[in-house]
Length: 136
Image (cartoon, helix red, strand yellow):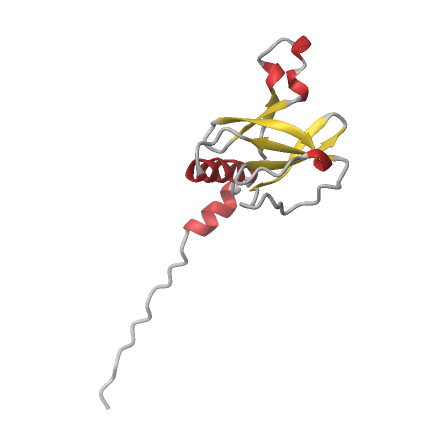
């Protein structure tokens, strides 16, 4: 599960910046700062990385990670009132934005369980059957 925390975790609460900015941590451990928008108020920002976020009981949960299309269109509904859109605006270019998106998406994927990982690594070994040919 992707982890995040507010900017105010590093700044005094009276700044009010925790209501506007949020850090999300990628699988690499890198932290990426995001601007917080209500789903219906998020402007189209061509190529920017976004995180769809559900807010429940004061907790933020990342739902998905993606990028705005070149024309600013988005693959989510802007009408969902219980969601926020967190937008990362600091990537310098398309490759950097794709790196951020990939790092955050990897952080959202739960790590494989050890037993499942071991099952994938162990290959079934079948001893070849030796046939003795008998001359007739």
